[in-house]
Each structure stands twice: as C-alpha cells, then as structure tokens.
Image (tube, rainbow, N blue to C red; front, side, top):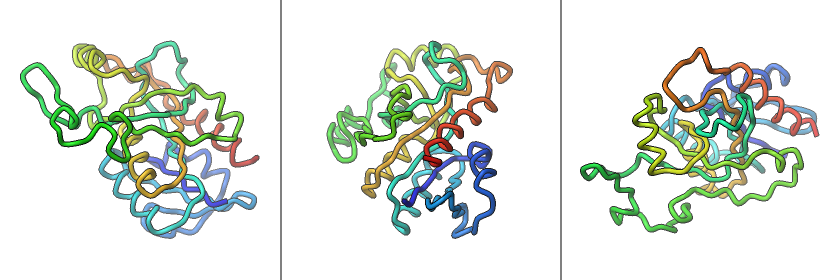
Length: 225
C-alpha cells in the first residue's frame, strides 16, 4: 500500500517520523519512509491553503497513492470536545471566498461564479464520501470543517462568523487538501486533533503537544495494523 501523509508543519507529524526512522528525500518537502510493508511518503507543505493546494496537487500528479491522509491540529468551535480529541473531518469549505456587500457576505455561489454542485463541490461543500473499513477511524467524531486564511481570535468576529457558517472545527489547510485529492481522484481522509477552542486568543489555554501526540497515535495505530 502506498500512502501520502500531508501536514502543514514538521512538528505536527514528528512523533510518527521518529517511529519510522530515516528516509530518503524524494523532492523538496517530500520524504519517503517504510513501515513494515507500507510505503509512506510524508509531505510538509507549509502553512495555509495556497501552499497546501500547490504541493498536494504537485505530488499527487507525480506519484501514485492508494490513500492520502491530512494530519494536523485544529481549533474547535464545539466546546463539548475535550482538547486532544481526534476528529474525522467529513466536509470542509472555503468560507472567506466571496465578496462583502454592506453587512452581508456573498459566496461564489451567491455571485453566480460557482454552481452549487460544480465539481468537486456538493451544495458548496467539499464532501468526503470515502467509506473507511478501519474500525477505529469509524469511531472518530465526524465533523464539519472550515478552512480560513486568518484563524479566529476575536469574540465579535467569531459570533458574526458563527451566525453565517455552521462548522465544528477550523484549519488553514483542510479544504485545500480535499480540493487537490478530489481533482486527482485519490481516496483521502482528514484527521485533526483539537488543540484549542476558537475564542479570544489565549495560547496559555491551548494544548498543542497533546493534540499532536493523539493524532499521531491514531495514525500510528492504523499504519501498524
């Protein structure tokens, strides 16, 4: 089985890389490892949807994979999930792409620049319909995500955003990953661990180490099966 793991930063995948040992660098940002009989390529794209779309699309068009996995941390709008919870993002979107009209936001669909079901979108969402046979992954909370250029950290902007968009987690790369995988027809999953709640920015209340550890454990358990 050939697997591509996509992450924004090296620390987010460091626990897994340490378990796999050394591997050859195939291209800039892309390193190949072997775990048992599985070939695992790790792609570090850099932060944000532009870098993620470019690098993921580039690698998927150059190499063949049976599965692509986006791994990283996220902020959660839902305070019912404890910090460190690993979630399966089953749909994602680009909520900032559009135009302002006074107090209102107009999406590309509102502007007639995108059809509601124009590929790869379904009703304006990037929906991951891949049915996983892995039982532990099936038990992960299935959540809706948003992908943003600016993570939220202001109570007023959060409240205004929540009035318009219903989502449980936010990242800076998830929808870009889906967009690239869907276009290249590669099965994929987005695994994220909650490092913080989306609120007034206070990093003293975050737990990034726990989130990184947990999402890597979920991934490592799958790869060791």
